[in-house]
Image (cartoon, rainbow, N blue to C red; front, side):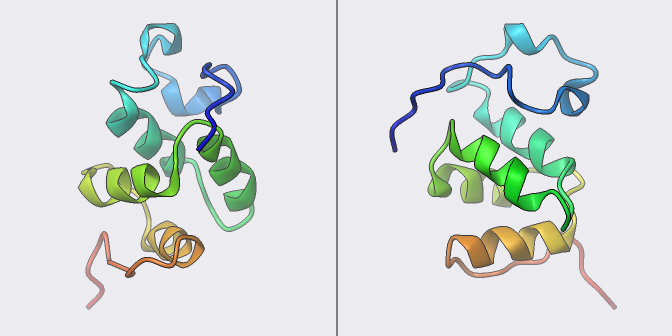
Amino acid sequence: MNKKERTLEFLPKHAFWDTDINSLSIEHDKEFIIPRVLMTVDKDNFDLNIQLLERLYDPDEIYTALKRTKERISNDVCRMIAERYNEPFFFRYMID
């Protein structure tokens, strides 16, 4: 993937409310950055936010970070990511 934009300036600022976004490294902090953006995603803004992430990361990086994170990301977002990248769906939270 061509990573033309090497800045985090276009990402949603409210996702990093407790962090100095300028201190983050796109490569070294991707396991932090990707889940933080995904935490702000819902059905209405999925396309916009996933496209923002895809400006920095390839689908495998996004899917892998989602699977590894302990952040509170909804099962709906997990499903939307899995469908977008033709990957197996997994539940973040089990439904009884």
